[in-house]
Amino acid sequence: MGALPSTMHDHELTKELREREKAEVLKHFRSFAKRSAWKKSRISRELGVSLSTVDRWLDGHDKIMLASMLEIRRFLTERERDSLSGQKYH
Image 1 (cartoon, one colour):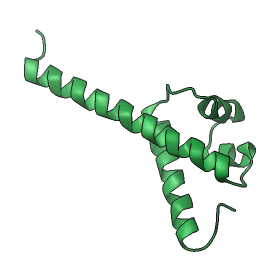
Image 2 (image 1 turned 120 degrees about the horizontal axis):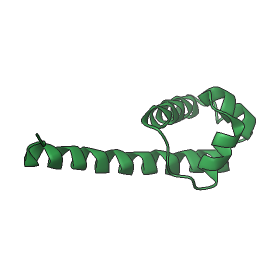
Image 3 (image 1 turned 180 degrees about the vertical axis):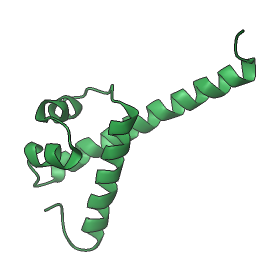
Image 4 (image 1 turned 60 degrees about the vertical axis):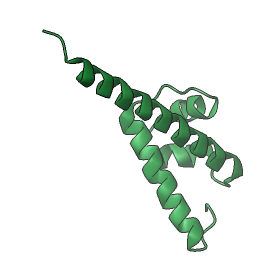
């Protein structure tokens, strides 16, 4: 038995919104990496992912898991908070 049309629509809409959110988070992540004094290896350790994964994300790879997107968002939020308190990405 298939899903109701409205349920399918809601699922597709949620999926589309999540993909847009991933793209936005990656855009901010790439911007952070460009203007930051942080090395890729430090970013990799902070995020708990391999250096090659960070390289892929910075090189434009947009296919990321939801958990990775949430971790990047958390990381960027913490860096922004640090920046506002005077600790400029160090």
